[in-house]
Image 1 (spheres, rainbow, N blue to C red):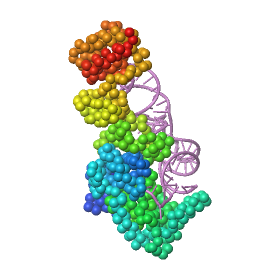
Image 2: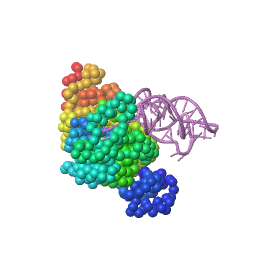
Image 3: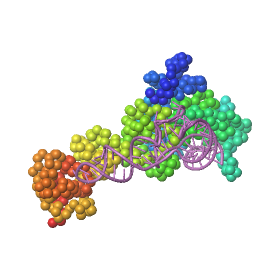
Image 4: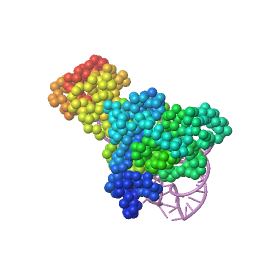
Length: 529
RNA sequence: GUCCCCGUCGUCUAGCCUGGCCCAGGACCCCAGAUUUUCAAUCUGGAAACACGGGUUCGAAUCCCGUCGGGGACACCA
């Protein structure tokens, strides 16, 4: 395994550490003291798996009207899931919806749907459920927990009430900006007498001097000077807890050992660590994974095109390909490009996670999707294809075996399920028109007698198989003294309306004698005399 | 602006920790050829990168310093 290989290479454990690891206490060892910190960075010993790891994805909600799990969030979820599954730990889901105005049940449902489409099953430890999906957490259901923690911090003097009106703070911030100075709250309310009757925000008291070191699995030690930080707000004056506060309280109470999240959270981390300390809680192990970028190397967003996972699903991408691609963004395993979910769980290692941002490359995703399309069992492929046929307004016969053959032929030249449906219309309905350019080239005066003879031969052909069809075509071509292509292309145009399709013999065979002959006959009317 | 992170082909990356096997390997994309009933697939070949400048060293993509560039964070948003 996985995140532990470095430790293995470092040779045998010292007896004390070994004892600790095998004791029931080890769950809390990451928190016990820095002495064991190096040990916990590589939490697995040989084949022994430790079952105490818990990670959480950032099931965040977004301001768009629909709300959705986007590519970056999905990748974070995937890394959490891979780590948890590989380490034999738990993977929990928490919806961070403290901003109520932005979050809707519909948005939450879409996130759950996207996650399960990818196959990232979370451990159902949470109390929430909505019929289909169960066992997740929601921050808005945990307000009582945040309140209790806030009160404790206040009582212990670790936090204090701030009575500065938001407008005044805003004004001061602008002033500072005008002077081109960084604005930080000056702590003027730190020692103010309590006025429980006035509205107040709760701020965390942060030491003026010193520094906080973040131990990050990806970046190593990152140092932040306290002078850079200010007494940040834990609870707003309207009583609502802030995101950074909730996250810390949640991670502690949910016993999260590994916080794996996007790099954009790295600068929040020292603030959070200070809160862990104020609360008297051990800190988890952090891993800040690189972000996913758009082609302009900026943060990936809507203006770069589709970023919603469900949009990719609707476009006909396979979850297998999506997972595979997302895993390879920022992570690698030698020269291997294609991974099954199982392979990923087995091979995912934190030390092969890169530290630089990665540009989302749709072309490579499409290539991978084509690859996965090709690997899918034909019957399974057909089943997944059906919804896309319906969406394209095509009526597919019930016969799964027949559809599987069609799907197998159609997948050869398509990158997505949707493309398969678009390109394969002629399996389900006759051509509405013939490609004009192709007509000029292949429906000529010479075509007519050739097609007519072909039809006569095919009427008597037995059996109606690709092999027999090919034999007939070849023989006729020879008799006529023309090349096979001179027979194949007119036939293809007659049957599909285009000059592009899988091998024409296979297409004819799949259509069946009656339909094939009908289309060829109809084409004769379009050929000049 | 301040702080933090990052910097190998156009893109994803291997190599960097533990300098020489790297005039830098793989994959996507692109180009050419082979194959072929069309297109695709496939196969073969090709173009394509160590951001820059110093230093250390017999030797640097690899170690050190600086510069430049990109990104992120700086809210009573999450």
